[in-house]
Length: 273
Image 1 (cartoon, rainbow, N blue to C red):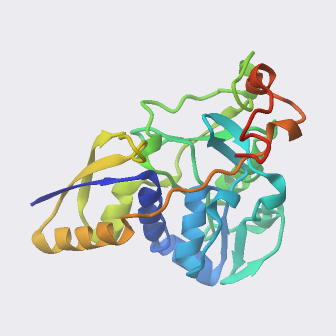
Image 2 (image 1 turned 90 degrees about the vertical axis):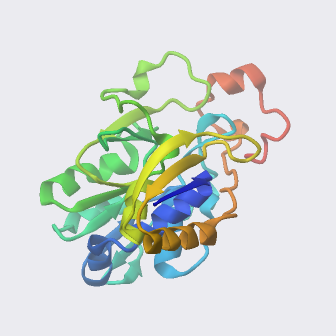
């Protein structure tokens, strides 16, 4: 039997988050070891599903793509990453927190691109690689699990390697490089549906209009009981509101990009909108 449905980006983030918190590795790390949930909008949904709370998702970010360009969040509003030791949230620098990671611990980090081979790409605005640059070597060295929840709205044919910040002579938005990640446990809508409902999903269309920009359309195969479970789940997340916009005002930037030099801090920009 077959089912067909479309998910907006926000609905897809909710679906993926529900699956991430069900992963045995995540549950084990949360209860018995260390779990780190880095900043990112999809990760904000993960925090909500894990703890049963509401998070201002637009503030659980560091870098953002919004208003048609790469930028950073409003620094004073950024929520610190959720870091746990045996189920208790702790306050720590995320780079220092992972120094004591062991093989059974888990780091959750979102991405800006994913390809069919499940390679992920993470945009970085810092010359030291941002969060992923601070934790990557430790995670690989000790064999900790890196979980990357990423919606297929971010599907690209190939995640390229070696794209650095200094490669660009002009940018409409903040300059950024691309940190390529291989070997992570990538969770897209396809893995999420398999985890939650034991069905096989295929991405068959992308895009839309009138608020459905970035949407993904899936064909799902399963028996009657499985498809009933899928449709019940999808109906429960339908109507998930989009993540609001949050961005530093151009006038507060110490390194203005070409967009600001060409347009100035126009209407709607002063409040980071």
